[in-house]
Length: 296
Image 1: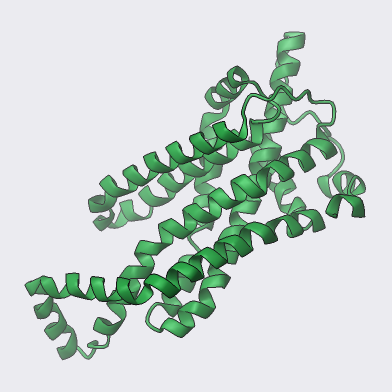
Image 2 (image 1 turned 90 degrees about the horizontal axis):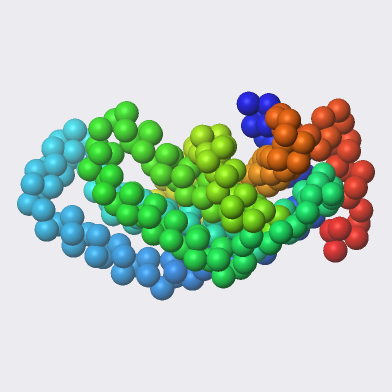
C-alpha cells in the first residue's frame, strides 16, 4: 500500500515537469491527426451505415413512435452519431495508450530512473519489437474480452465494472511491461507481475475510470458534427493526460519494486519499497535533478 500511494503522488508531481509536458505533445499531435483524419473520411459513411442498421429493425419504429408521443422525438437524430462515437471511443483509447507507450514511456522511464534510481542496473529484458508484440497481443485479448462481454453491459452494475476492469488490465499489461523493459530481465518482470499483480491491476483500473471522463465530452458533441470536431481534440488531450499519468505511475511503482526485490535478493532481508528516497518529497528531490537540458 505504501508503494501504491507513494508512486501515485510522485506521478502527479512529475506531470508538471516541463519535460513531461513537452514529451506528451508528440503522441497528442499524432492521435489528434489520426482521429480527425479518420473522422473526415469515414464520419458520414459510418453515420449512414448505422442509420441503415437502425432502420433494419422493425421494432425500433415502435420505439420512435413512443418517443415522439413522449416529446422526445429528437432523440432519433442523435442516436446514430452517438452510436458512432461509442464505437469509435475504444479505437481512440487504444491509439492514445499505444502512442504514449511507444513514444513517451521510454523517455519517462529514463527520467524517473535518472532522478530516483540512478544506481539501478539496466538488464534490458525487453526490446522495442517485444514491446510491440506484447502490446498488440494484449490489445487483441482486451478487444476480445470487450466483445464477448457486450451483452453483460445491459446489466446496470456490470456496465460500471467490466469496461474499466478490461481497460485496467490492458493498461497494466502495456504500461508495466514498458516500465520494466529496460531495467528488468524477463524473469524479474514475471516475478514482479506475480508479486504485485493485484496492485498493478488496481492501478490500471483506477486509470481506466479516469479515462472514462472524456466520454462526457464525446456525448456533448455527438449530435452535432462541427461540435464533435471541436470537442474531439479536447477529449483526446484528456486521454493523453490520463495515459501520461499512468506511464509515470507505473514507472515509479515498477522501478521501486524492482529495486526492492533486488535488494531483498542480495541481502536476504525483505525490503519494503519504496527504498530510493524515503525521506524527501518528490517535488523537492526530483525537481532539483531537472535542468533545462532535460527538456531539450
